[in-house]
Image 1 (tube, rainbow, N blue to C red):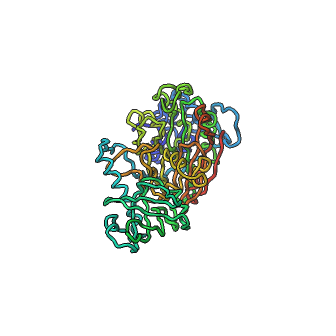
Image 2: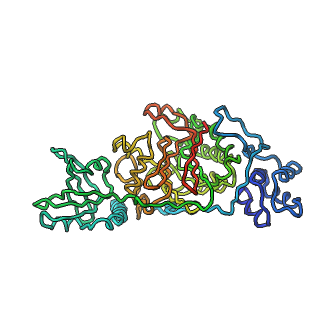
Image 3: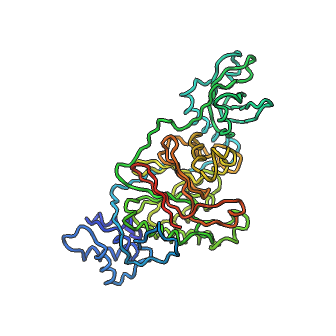
Length: 503
């Protein structure tokens, strides 16, 4: 079997009855011929040894023609303290730790890579919106005794009625009330929300195309439903998240933007070095939520801010940086709007050529969005382009760039990562709507807006993890002040968060 990654080396050692220190595995993987290095290390191991030590492997490598190790086999730097320029870490650094790989587990759901069926025809859009409505209305029908719009239209005035529908229009009346038009598969019906009702403030949260339920009383002529209550698909307030059975941590990052002149290489080196220290011994997962590279042609005059102008070279450079993290981490990545995939969501998880470039450490690549379950904890990973739209449409106290997690709360409430159609967020028509949040996640992880923010909504941890890019001229022109060089670390057994700064 090929032995170019630490995970495969660990598997091979296990099959021969050996374990190894984490740094020993990294040293073997970094040798020019990992297979030959492993064979020599096993052949020369003491007869009673069950674990290959760092000293033993280093002796084998220094005494053979297998060559030197890659400079990324490093550790021992206290990342959160230094903001000075990082220098390449020497091979013989101390403080490396051994992680127990036997309990690691990763399952991926909702990956649509290779399953795209949409052709862009009208019928495709009808199909995806019908699927969205069916699934979201199903979450509401258990809470209200809803009837189809055509049935409500045939009822006598003064009767109580309930409707589940997609919002096709929102407008204010001359008296300051709100007229919300709901549409289902049978037609449309106008619903009036009076400005003096206690839930009238919820109108500020409504977006076109989202699915809601209303209950109320029909007018005397049965032409309008006067709304008495309004319901979102929402996360149940009683939701209790799953947690890991042991103390294990995940690092949640996003928006690395390798290839940009403002990519913060020094901060990345400090982060990678910290992952090799005892302080990070429980970090076994690295989840990267899109925009691994800066891309090409993403915004006007971007070429003037590029350090690497070839998209493939950007991914090759990103892979070199990824090599610096410990090889025994489980890595999961999804694409973002700067990555070399289609802009329309859901985004498939890269083509074979880019996957072959980014196969470092056997990283798992999946679509945007996807649900990743690690140690029983479900993490909804979504890059987050729709956050721009939510922040633009809603009042600042309910969604802002300074508190991006509040915009994420809105997506959880609507149970859809991109509820509004036809705006900034491009949506691809598929046989099913992959953007619906069918199952409540334990963690909701996004990026895109380059701001750090986190909190809990009905016990779901919402995390926007910032970026690894300093402010660009383009960001200055649109007043984006990024939160750069942060690595949120989540305890999977408690869902507590520690934010580490490396810039």
